[in-house]
Length: 435
Image (cartoon, rainbow, N blue to C red; front, top):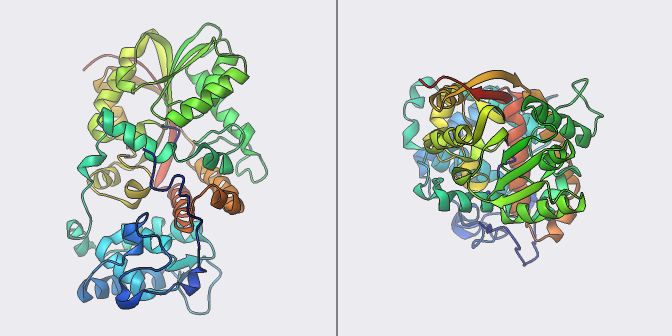
């Protein structure tokens, strides 16, 4: 998630939110709009879709049956996580029309809640292949939407996609990240580490990547995806000379402030530049959770840029989220809730895709280590910090729908790692033999 992302419809919202408790939310006349959702900001959340009685009935049968089978809506409650429906008709209607996008939008609208959101989503992620009967999976194309052409990561598109997430507000990210402002998986000791602070765990992750890339005194380092500058700061403290690239103007501004405050202005240069336009030759290249923002169409360009920047004998350290290859292929062709609301243009690669594209660029994988459970813990801590600072987020101008969207995003991501649907890897690449 460290990759850099247009000023969003959510940024600087201006009008103070006027939320109602989810259990009191009601449909507008004829079930057309949610009266407590701002339609100009959240058109698809404010408006209930026209699903038709057949689609709604099918969703009620399939989804309702799955939730009961997984004991997520058992009457009287169970010892496991519970999903509470405030508006079953709207819930099933959204899912019947828009599938998993509708599921997420229904949460944003306050039509359902949970006493353990990450727990419910983890159960669903762990049984994702059982939720729809096998014969109906072949009809998937009837209810899933294709990715919008406007989300493609051309140079202009990548800039817009980056800004839509990462330029929301530095203060928003500061509200839930640790003081290092590191927006990627930490690495904990004595796992599970319920009592270790995020800051040392993030420094441990960064130091592992710097060690993997062989960064030390005099190293010429290229970082693709600046974040808010913590990796560049730690590399400079080792004596490296760092060029770091980002497409986020807000990240770049704060990273430069932090670098100047640390006295490393002469050692670190922050450039607002696309990775495809990287210049120079470097002993080491590091990119932390940026490939997920590239898009499958441009993975060849990404790995070609890494290879082009590498000096003879140089090393590339990557940190990347991964998913299974078949799941990746399905996701690549689908407009998802995450791609609609959180990471437009993004796609998590599989390890196979990384291996194939890096090899095609003349790179060999020397090391590959996974830390999936560490990411689940990182996301849990971020989510707890975010929910504990709701008043601050409200004061920043982010309304109730945004806050529910963000909580769902963090819990959804945590569930992906807890269920092992997702993993995060640290890879070492060096110059290999071109095929």
